Length: 218
Image (cartoon, one colour):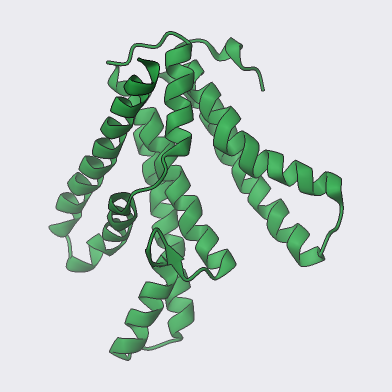
């Protein structure tokens, strides 16, 4: 029963993300055709489908803590986690110079190619990376907007999660540049940017949304 409920809620999360971005596109399409480019990039990533691992842990934590599955606030919280993850993916692809994401060209590569094909001014690589940074930033802004519709009790853990993953990302980049071979540092980075970000803190966000942050202390 719990598994089926999580799967049903994940479908609602996917629908929430799609409808949110569709509404944003409608709003900005009236401004200028360029105003929807970043939104379309996010929509493409949402529609391409992800594993929704972090939303799933959030929902599991919420249900385990006795949360009401009919409360739309938990769908907003889980959607915020996925939007945050999309932000991280777009930025990661720039950092790692990845070629693809979810079966499609990475945002920075797609826009670098567009720049080159149209003969625009400036360096194509820098244009593509600049667009990707802005697309990732927009996803970060949208994640906060989605979380504003979640139960207020979830937000302190949400803030911890966001700052922690950014710090973990920096530590990872710095350790790679330093060519560090410190096993303790490697474990710490894995804990911060993977274990806590993917499993622990989403669980606590969910439990906190149900009013039971005490079930999983940091």
